[in-house]
Length: 265
Image (cartoon, rainbow, N blue to C red; front, top):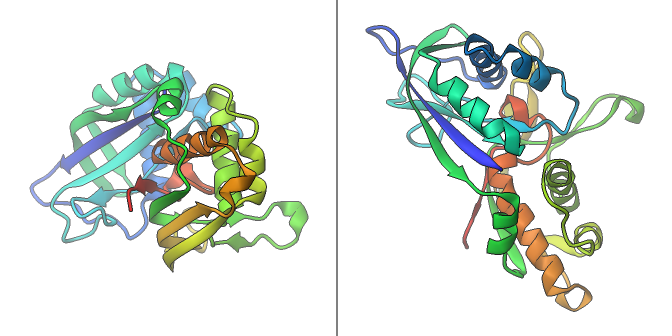
C-alpha cells in the first residue's frame, strides 16, 4: 500500500549538526545504508538498482517549518514514500531498528519512526471524488529531465499537467490497481494550469556535480471542459493527485525532488 514514513532525527552529540544546503542524495545514501544495516541488504540493492519507476520516494532533511534543514532548525526529519505493498513492513521495521544515521557529515540519533499515513490503492480510489480542480503545494524543486536522445541534457522545470499526471499514472500502474481507462484521455488532452505561484530553486543531483533546477511553490490544475470527460475519469484523476503525497511528482524523487502535497483550496 502507499505509505509515508517519517524519520525524526536528534543530534548525536552535544551540539546540533549543521547540514549542508542540499541533502537529497545524502538522505538517499543514509536510507539505503539503514536498510543494509538492519539486515535488508538485498532490498537495499534492489531499490538502488531498479530502473524507474522506483517504488519509493524521499524528501531531503526538513525542519519544523517544512523548510530545508539548516543552522536554525530545532527539529529535523525526512520522509519516505513507499509505493509497493510488500515494502512497507520491511522498510518500517528496518528504519525502526536503526539507532543512528549519518547524512553527509552530520550524525543523528533516530529519535522516532512514525507511520505518518498509509492507504491501499483501493482505498485511494474509494475516497476519490469527481473533482474539477486540484491544488499542489510543491515543497522541493520539481523538474523533468530530457533523455540522452533528446540532445543536450536539459531540465524542464515547469510542472505541466500532462507531464505530472502522466508520470503519476505510470507509477500508479506499476504498483497499484487498474484505473479507469478514460483517465488517460483526460490527462493527455483536457487538464490545464488554472493558477500557480512558482519560483526556481536549485537541488543537488549528485555530489560534486552542478545542482539542477526546478520549480517550488503552488500550482492548481483544472479540467478544461467537463463536458468532454466522465465523473469516473475525474475521480480516477482525483485518486492520482492524492497519490502524489506518497509518490512525489516529476523526476529524481528518490533524491528529494518533487516533494508535493495535495491541499484543499
